[in-house]
Length: 234
Ligand SMILES: [Ca+2]
Ligand SMILES: [Ca+2]
Image 1 (cartoon, rainbow, N blue to C red):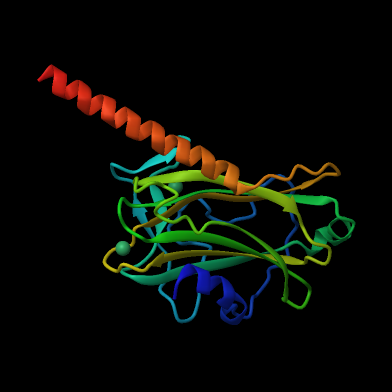
Image 2: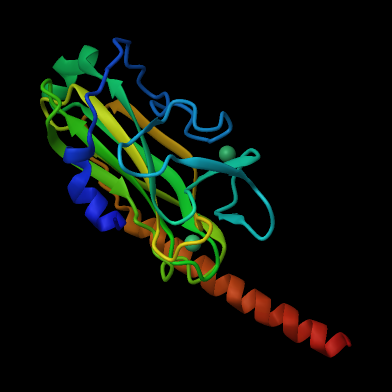
């Protein structure tokens, strides 16, 4: 199953979510273990696909823009699709949500390995009281051309407003590995925060994508300079 198909299949794959009752802190990351430092704690498995996995950072992986990332990142399994999900209850903020006053910011680092076609997707479903999806946002899928064949995780973010009627939010992280062997899709530093606001600040993750493309160009140029320099010093 590709990540594009996965998007369409999410309502079917959605398990019967047990939504814990808890207060919704504004300004705090609502994704549990979004930094992969606690393994896959907090992420439930989807039926029919592989479980998410984590791996230790090792060269030549880098983040653009650079950021603290701990020692672990999310990755997938040995080919095919791997995914995990979690849900947070926001029903205690219902009045403000329904008044259109609650904005969200979704951010994360997503990327992959060199020439592997594997690609990550962080898909966020806004669910009503019956658990039906009434809106969504996402980061990715980040395909190989967007990271220009580099082994890099790019920083992406998007924001908007929770749709009126939102009572819980489901986060689905999927890693598609169409070319088999080990997973070459990576993700880390995932965060989703809410704020009470009245002023729109729409912003697309495409802006970050442009930044990543610029980074790729800079790295290529820098690599050329380095190899050119090493040639001239030999
Ligand atoms: Ca990490
Ligand atoms: Ca692969």
